[in-house]
Length: 73
Image (cartoon, rainbow, N blue to C red; front, side, top):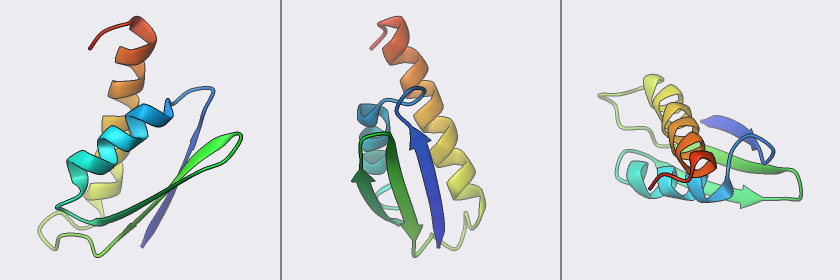
């Protein structure tokens, strides 16, 4: 299982939710939000992708957050 923390000052909760939807068929994704962070648990990772999945999930969140901050769809 991988635990990821995305601080809201850098990563939008919407970007994390979008990543959760995009990766939902490759892992069990649990998202929790608090005042400062959006927390993600990735479990039951697709065996083809293994540990790379957490890195790719984080990259997706980063890209989607940058696009949101720039006002891009």
